[in-house]
Amino acid sequence: MELNQYLSELESLVNIDSGPGCLAGLAEMAEFFRKRFAEMGWQTEWHDLAPETGVCLVCKNREAEHYDLMLIGHLDTVFPAGTAKERPFRMEGDKAYGPGVLDMKQGSLLMYHILKEIPKEVNDKLNIVAVFNPDEEIGSEYSKEVYQKYAEISDYAYIYEGASNDGARSNERKGRSYFTVNFRGKAGHCGYVFTSGARSAVSEMGRWIVALDSLQSEERNVTVNVGVAQGGIKNNVVADQASIEVDVRFPVPEELARLDAMLETLTEEARGRGIEVTITERHTRPALVLTEAGKEYVRHIEELLKSHGIAYKHRLRGGVSDANIIAQYGAICIDALGPAGDDDHSADEFLHIDSVLPSYELSMTLIKDLADRK
Image 1 (spheres, rainbow, N blue to C red):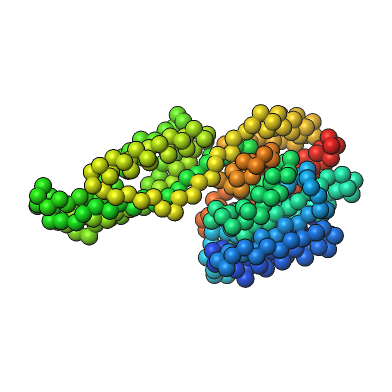
Image 2 (cartoon, rainbow, N blue to C red):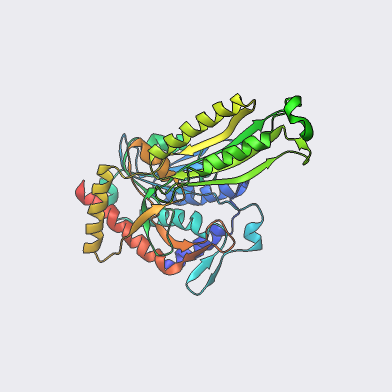
């Protein structure tokens, strides 16, 4: 792969706003890849998902009932319109900067270069599908229906999120459940609560915050964050409304079950105190947990890459990705195969330029191995 060409193309992509609501930018990103895969002779599918999101692009080396390998990247970032103009792509020493340079325009672009340059005999032997989705940063709520179709008929899935700052990949990721809890009590004068029947939504909110925080455990590697808490209007008025926004990260399904049980218990207890509770805007991604087949594949690629002199390390990641969803359909997932960097979702986000070619070589070795073993 020609690194300078890659960096030139990466600059073009980073300088396209493709954050929330940037539909024209998302379409421009998708067209960048559609055109290039079409020039390679690959089949392309253009999925208009919904008015509030962008286009999901699917590229296949051929139509097939079964795919040996699925690659996935996302086109969206977390940054609003105008960010690319404010701080466009730049390089300083061995680092590249700009909105989405790590998460994950670098990985989506690397997918294209890998598939463009795989040997003909590998392309002939493997059925490969690549998916570029526009809504990963908002949970892939629209695109997952598109890529589920391919995940269900794929043996392996490589996800090109950025590697950790030290180059570590990811075979396991925490699951995530985030939601809003709304409390409705009864307003009243704070001096007459024993006779007015007033019920404080804020007091109930406090009980929930303490109870949910008790789920947090370093030993079990469970984190609970009540990121927003609000309620009431004045200090002498019993609050009739309150709400919290909660994010829970968990490494195994059993911890999600513990959360669900607590939410049910807390809701019943609140109703017994005269407080109505509704849980809204709940979204859950399952944990990415290595199956026995996944563990066997990881052992295989560790030995394979070692024999090629390629470093491979991996760790549990606290952030979620499309791998959390894809793995539920049976594909063995290897995540964070993109180049390394850090500080994503911030103005300091950066990519290690010297990690691009090693990431390319790692993936080429894995894909050639899939063909050899078929």
